[in-house]
Length: 556
Ligand code: NOJ
Ligand code: MG
Image (cartoon, rainbow, N blue to C red; front, side, top):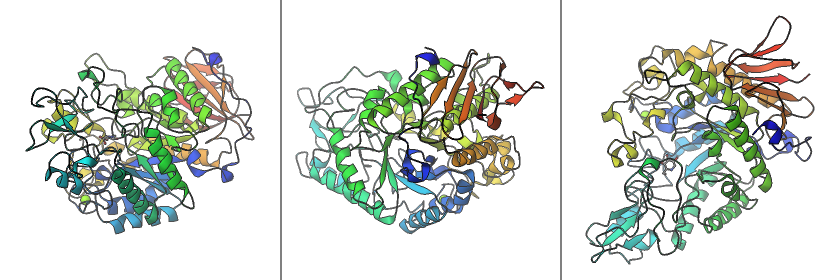
């Protein structure tokens, strides 16, 4: 496919000026993984006071909003996505008052705040699951979960073949009640709740209300495509062990049509607030079309675009996924979102790095490609997500010792799938303090020994650093009347592997990305607003794009 085959959307009609648009349509949202961001009390776990103290850093970075991954009381068997009480804060991470402080300070700094809600499951430490365990299946307490009779003469086999997304079966035996099983699409410590039960609807409404009333601007919804299971729990496709946490879930436990009823209910509730509150859904569904269904006008405002995240380093692949994403979101009137990184996937620096003959990763190239992709995504219409440390160009930590690993996939696959700890290593703030200024104690995951030069402190004083480039890009995005929500026009660059697009309008911006292996020389005029990878003008004034580079030009 060439850019010529892609939909071209002419003009800038229909997009209101920035001041008049809904903020979430083109917000840049920074994801904080609280345990790994900043530790204020030396216990090695990042915490809410640590986050609060660093908010000015995020304001200076130039993002519009923050999203906090779970900070709720939790046994931390799935990094906090195993929630024991959704209306409280884990005492190791702080208090509800600390969260209120974060919201107040963020708002004073001009930042919006998203928090996480996990509607598919509770932790097995949740009071309701403890109450269920104290009763027999069939009780009202068990009706809040999925307690199902097993197969086989005595129910000794799981009710069906559904796999846990973390490996192994999605069913565990209910202790003391032979032949009965409970459902967990994730870890056995995360029992799925039953959305056929009104109590679950009411309880989640109470959770939304609790945090909305405290001032949060929106929720990121965990696994927004599960919740409803096909009636009768029928078998699904044969489980594929190679697909553990691959974002490829399918079958009767996923993406069921009636899940959309829940999102309509939630949307009505969010709209009852002034100003209306906002949702971004996590839905790793298989097609862009089914993803778009979640952002119909009466459902979620946005969903993460994981198709973009899965694109590999090729002009064709990137062009295709951008085009499809724009087309599909336009069909439902929702802005697209651009995600390159989060707490579940390999960091892009390593993902995009060529693998060398000795099996190691060429991180220098990987870092250039990741930055070029970020510049591209920040120039696309819609909203963008950054995951903490992405702005520092951190790589995936691949050599964590086995005994440090905490991801449930590691345990449920007996180490076959190492899991997601490598992108959750605490981030480096300074170059020569213990744990790079993350904590005065021992970080919950060990940090590499060569991160001093990647610290915020080191990069802040280097105008050529990844951090400095992000700051320039985010500042330019804010100032530009055409970046953010709006139209995009593909151009033929006339050069192999060079993507070219324009954001049209009063002060048009041209975006070029070289995904090829050679320098490309182009004749475009215009001031270089932001670049990565060494884009420059040669002696004749022609624009030179080295491999793995990206540039934003003020179109002359
Ligand atoms: C998606 C979250 O991003 C991930 O970290 C978590 O393990 C699963 N949902 C289960 O809650
Ligand atoms: Mg702490």
